[in-house]
Image (cartoon, rainbow, N blue to C red):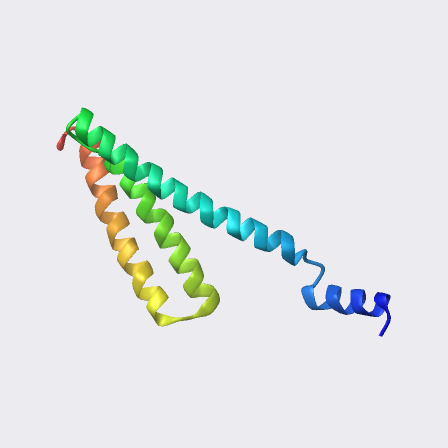
Length: 109
């Protein structure tokens, strides 16, 4: 098998996708997700110390991100435990959303 045959076979298997680029994007998204969660936790801690309250909107965003990540993983892999984790994060997202709306309306501090 010559070089052109190997290249053609690799391209047909990958359907023209750059696997290294996809892996880099996936790794970058994973690190961005982790950094985002850490920053939201830091914001919660600082707001709790300085303002004696936290922004429920930040927590809602964190739970929505986790819900989307696990639900997407469930859709791709089809593993039931991923669905249960996604549902748990979805319930948390709904709770934080309700608390955030109440906070915006002035019902909660």
